[in-house]
Image: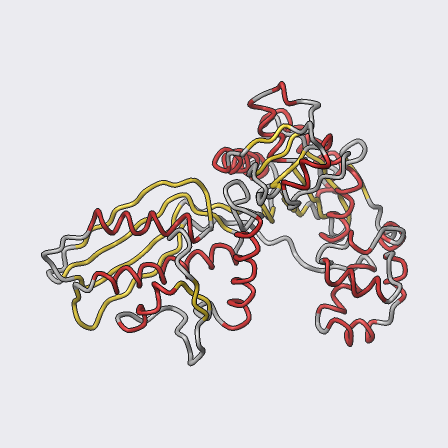
Length: 405
């Protein structure tokens, strides 16, 4: 059976949601993000892009490029709610789909030509999303995920639909700049351009073994994508509801500073797992079990986030409200629930460019050396009273000052 893969993208998603709430924003340049010198642009309308504004650009630069732009702080909770709404529309109308981010989906329509016609089905699904959610969207269709995603980019400039006929994948990609290939970041693009490889057609002609020497394992993968080859499957999407961790102490304790340090370390570890899995939480819970085995749990709803400095105050507030100073503690735990997929690992609505860069640097170190190699100083004593999921393994952790925590 020949593969047919559909890629759907919700156009300027955050801006589109705001325009549903306030139609007066239609046709005007709109920026979503923190309105400060160190804030960043979470999303921008096509009208703002015409001035050179792009997502993840410093807000200060964006305002210089487009002084007349309307700046909105954003409502991440509302955006995730609308994303869930679209997810349910897709779930009800296709046999297999993958939610790759808050505003992107892959759908496997292989075999539907025989029964319904994949193009007809894709067109109907797009229109159903528009009618039922009010959100504009575009799609690309081909034999694999890579080509379909690139095709969606082409669709946005026209009718919102783009089909790449079987056997034409390579010439379709050839004239485009190398940055259009999914997975080509700034550093990879700079390296390739320094070699004179600016267009995909040039990359298509580079020997695969040379790509291997230049980029390691990523080289052959990139070469195959440039040649329109991608066998990665559409992975059935199932939303994970919660993540948690807890520790039982060898000796019951009333050492409050160390308990708070352990809570900090546990929450940091879970938040890193959220970001690594491109998830956000909107519900934080703390669990305490006393020496007499009485167990108490309390939770609070918060705006969707995966940021330590927004989660930690809630964790410590819950502990303060739960803790009975007359009793020793046997077990303590932290749980994040109401998880949703989110392409933006950092809360761009409340964080500065500096904060985003800090999280990205911390997570890069954690992915390479382990998630306990970078930690807040207040969590350092945690290992003396409870074993974490990822022990230090002899590595000296990097200390961070307690920034807003």
